[in-house]
Image (tube, rainbow, N blue to C red; front, side):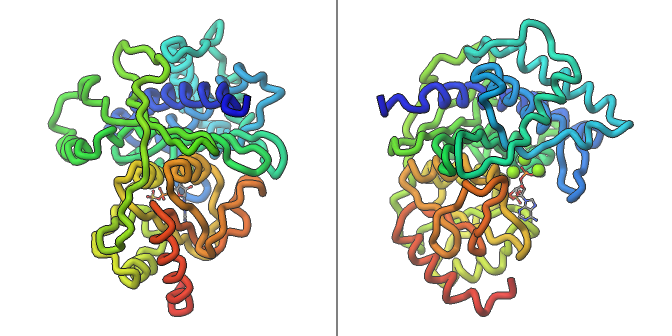
Length: 381
Ligand SMILES: Nc1ncnc2c1ncn2[C@@H]1O[C@H](COP(=O)(O)OS(=O)(=O)O)[C@@H](OP(=O)(O)O)[C@H]1O
Ligand SMILES: [Mg+2]
Ligand SMILES: [Mg+2]
Ligand SMILES: [Mg+2]
């Protein structure tokens, strides 16, 4: 039955992303306050933490158990390079403990725990198994265990992103956004909490009910959002899922544009010029991670633009889950030439024309693409 296609895959993906969000939420405060021991720098100087490796190991283990490790191909961001260094013993220990703690809670999410705790080599194997190269044929899971690691270590927004790509097309997307409340109005309360965090006692479970998990299946015309699982609650499908939709605003004067926080990740002056030329008036909303895609899918903003410096190759795990969720919620996602993103060429979005444009609707999208053509020659990219 066509309607049932990918039902099992979506079910497992949603459950494991909930599990991963809870793992990250438990670690984030400790990492923000204790800092450097649990945070490392990769060769490109970007941060990676115990949470990134632990989520990758957990998701890899659950998917491999559920579908059989022979049948599962996973492309994910992290590898075991840093963990294999001679001075990494305590880091590896922290990852192994975190993974086992998380997996022992699997039944709460309706998933199976391992019969006994995983040993170090099993955890490292689960991480390194996610080294598939993807491609145009077959099924490939695409995982960003923590997207916006910089936001995560700063106590701010981040996302857990899991997608399934089949024959080069994203067919399922799940985005866990542990600090992005179901109700947008609660967002400022969350920031006030972070600003004063050092002076406040640890938050209650209720306090952390301010994240969400979003998901969509290609072709369903529906995108959904659920509250996170907190306290003693168990995951019971559909876990209060509600439909989300993009904003109906198509007047640029009323639209809000999201963009990366880091200037190094997107040319802020180029996008400011574009925004100005199409008549946007609102201040850009700078937020870490794929929460930007979540914001568009939920109707909290109308536009997201990312123009990385020339030579930077966008990775598929930074976009796959967000793209299908935004599209099924009614939005449009293309490169700056107006073409869909190509998930069929391995770990990178090969052939991407300049940047990424995500819009709540076709009218706004057309204006932005026209403005890119008009302003590109005069830009300094
Ligand atoms: N130089 C450069 N240019 C463009 N993009 C880069 C660059 N460096 C990193 N990245 C990738 O961007 C991911 C974070 O993107 P964001 O849009 O969330 O940026 S920001 O954190 O808000 O500044 C981030 O994902 P994570 O590593 O998962 O955090 C990176 O994959
Ligand atoms: Mg990322
Ligand atoms: Mg990441
Ligand atoms: Mg990273």
